Amino acid sequence: MTIVAENRDLQIERLELGSYSTNAYVVVCRATADSVVVDAPAEVDRIVERLRDTNPRYVLMTHAHPDHVGALRELQSRLKVPVAAHPLDADRLPSRPEILLHDGDRVSFGKLQLEVLHTPGHTPGSLCFLTDGHLISGDTLFTGGPGRTASPGDLKRIIDSITGKIFVLPHDTRVYPGHGDSTVIKKEKDEFAVFSSRTHDPHLCGDVLWLSS
Image (cartoon, rainbow, N blue to C red; front, side, top):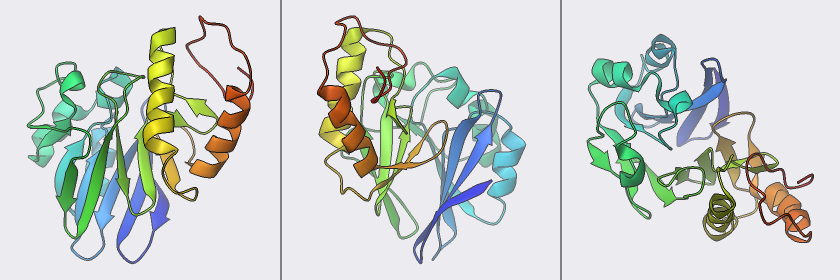
């Protein structure tokens, strides 16, 4: 467990879980102790233990890949709170979510709100969650590049999502991805400028890095 953000209003903690070291995040309203969990990769006991002194309100899913949903069914059963996801990924989850989220929606808990950004590319229903200069990006944006894509069309979609929804945020916005350490918008924009200045194979997709692909 690592506290990655903390101020008078909120606390965001990262838990690296499962064999893929997938990040789950716990966002806590400091005024009320209300909390949400973002993604449920594995090791449900660790997630539940971290929530012990909070009031869980939702489980929010960035996308439906197996390394992000392995503990979802059990977590849902133990917490008895709604699961929320985008409609385009909902049918791929272990169980149907109670709430369907769309671009521009807001998830309220305590005195906090998370803005929902639909960022397709890694999956059709990939979501990011934004609050107060902090972006939980799932597998849409990592430090150094976009999430893995299965086709050149998906790479274009994820780049459109990143440039149209994420790179328009303030430069000092912190980004907390689904794997690995956090980054900041300005760094990723500067590295993307290098990527976009070069000519690329039209079949490029998969694991792409801004500075070396």
